[in-house]
Amino acid sequence: MAEIELRSVGKTYGVSSEDRVKAVDDVTLTLAASSAVALTGASGSGKSTLLHLIGAMEKPDSGTITVAGSEVAALRGGALAAYRRTVGFVFQRYHLLPALTALDNVIAPVLPYRTSFDKRERARELLAAVGLAGREQALPGKLSGGEQQRVAIARALVNDPAVLLADEPTGNLDSATAAEILRLLAEVRRRHPMTVLLATHDPQVAAQCERIIRLRDGAVVDDVDLTGEYPAEDTIRRVGQLG
Image 1: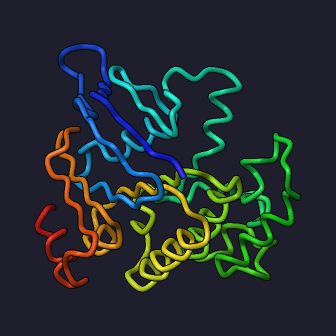
Image 2: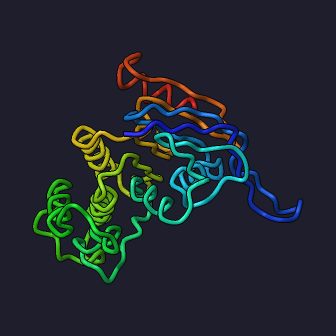
């Protein structure tokens, strides 16, 4: 579990004044340890960029990002690699390696490192936990979209991360499969306490979280705590109104 603090974080792309885009604009937030937070907003609002900054896939141009007491942008070398291993990523397009089996895709993030656990055994346990026992040797091309996302979730959990970042994890799935993935993520949180930050455009997905943060043009325009205040149907309706 890890608290995440962002202070005046900014990120701009482009060089000339004509093509400069402010993807993240002076964002200040504190995300409580073990909380589940949804990022909403239109395409291009900065959701994915914010996830990449927290996950140390990119560096901010300004401000600070502190996770569990460590300033992410200041990390270098082995310390940066160690931090990245505490973060699990789940992507909309799965990002599985097509030539590797489901089992080897789950193992891939920890393959170069010494671990305190047996890598293949951990991968088998995680695939069973996401409902894919017996499918360990299947290639991604032989799996449905929902099954591929299950593999991606198992892969994100292989290092027992303190933070899970999910970028539109149900965006490529039909509604029934998306609901299954949401139930799976909820079960994952119960079994493995972690801080979850989930980017989504879907009000029903966002309503599963405890807090909804809406972005527009890289800036926070709404920040709503939904814990225990409304029945499920009202929560979904209110989140939809934020869109």
